Length: 219
Ligand code: CA
Image (cartoon, rainbow, N blue to C red):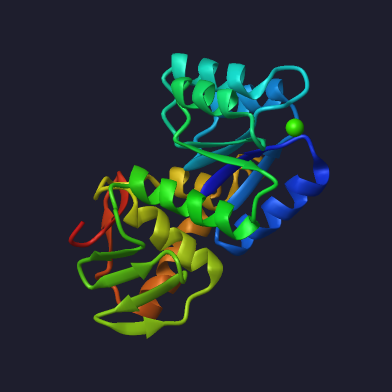
């Protein structure tokens, strides 16, 4: 899951980035509101964690601008404890969830996962599509009920496809979500990754839709 983390406190940002990365997110960071606004306006994220107190442009203004521009990714806002008016303002500005500082990292990760799940139309952390079962809380995959040993990248690819409602996903978009925009879009690497994955879990779990991209069978 390509995730934007907007936090100007470097210690908090380090902790959160580490935890989200361990949870399978591809984390990109911004430490001020203007950078955050630009990234959210031009890049495609599965979820955004947004601190409200930011230099250059406050988080609430960033969120309002994104929503005004039709950017619909789920946003979890972070704010100082007890600032309940910020919570109300944040929800009204289009935030999907709210966490007061200081927070438990585990709770933040659980909430981020829940947001991504809901955005993907899944109410539970276990998603079954065709022969594939994906447990986003455990980051595990089973085929016909048999657990599979996958690399983090292989897991993230299946996780991304599972959250697309059966939409055909172009290889370029997969490359962007798995590797981030700054590395450039390497479609060959995605084809190699999918070939490797098919050798592990069977050829028919991921469909190739010629000229368009990839989708999970049965989605
Ligand atoms: Ca701050």
